Length: 398
Length: 77
Figure 1 (tube, one colour):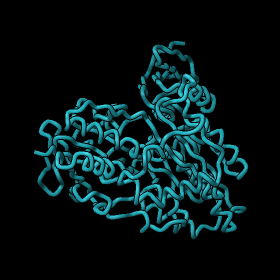
Figure 2 (cartoon, chains in turn purple, orange):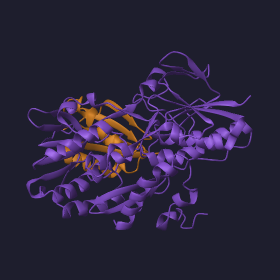
Figure 3 (cartoon, chains in turn blue, brown):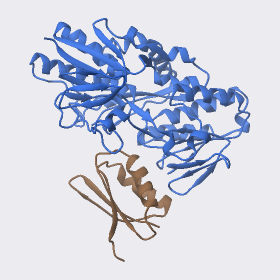
Figure 4 (tube, chains in turn orange, blue):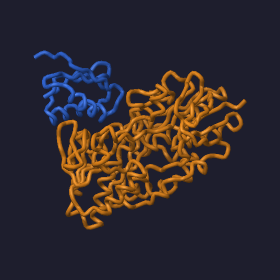
């Protein structure tokens, strides 16, 4: 009897883990991906969509076309996980049984947690929101733009910074920059969580005349007055407000009593096992790990989970551990970008923004569909390079 | 002045800016003079809380470290 592996979620992590498992285990496992839409969305493209640099069709593909033929796809919504019984209940009735479960259901946007956000703010964290923002920007004739964060943790931490840089470029190109003010409302006393990146980013913001308001954790929006308020007690007036909405884990996690107060899965930082469940693993945005919620994280985690499950099935010693590796590009506008490469032990040392990194991001966006979900990006291409590669003891890592 | 702790916020294992955001949220629910205790493990929280207290006017009355856990006592201003 082949082992039954159920993967919940057909995003980057779920798709890659399913393909890797089916490839490695062949007839020893039956792998099923469960996804409510059956469509795979390339979320890093939302930023480009909002700024009129991409069209929505490029960002969505049929999940079936990304999976190996020996992986089953069930277009169903999972509503409850029963860890003891080893089953997952489906919305339209019926259930699937599993020997091993991978939860890759991502994060959920909960804009209603912030009063006034849905009516007062635009965003680029869903396909619909990004399209709405693109239309609003087309109508925009200048004014005060405030860009902020309405809940932590959120996906793709550099995105708001990328957005202000790209918006600056967009408004200059349209001849509206002189008539506009751009301000980033940051939850901390700097532009970006990671200090080394902040040091690189802030001088560029200054040169471009992009304002920075610090310690501004968004509390509420008053759409009729055009005012956004912070938990710290400050207020900012806007003509156009762009906010990252609050995130939480999926309802499925709450309903299954597997998550913490935020609906995030308590996940082992190295094995990626969900607490107290030897046969349940989590990858991607749904974990409680203290690292970026991003496709890149899921991309690095998926091979670890695939390898661990394969070891459990074929009885070999599990060797693969997740070291917290993440790699993000960060657009700084004007066709330049930098890159953040880090893990649990090594903070990033971002290079000066250059056209090379922008080209690398552009290339990655182009190649994504043919490489990432299938596991075709060779491990060596994703290794850290440069000063980062030296371990804490100064020796070069193997 | 007494330092009776009105509330404790356990942010161990979380990376900034989450401890700052949660602290900002928690301190809203206290009254002036109340002391909030925050426990965190992110070393970055030390400069962040220093800067935050200066910026918001909430007083950082004590900061200690034990076994990698930072303990901040913040009096609502």
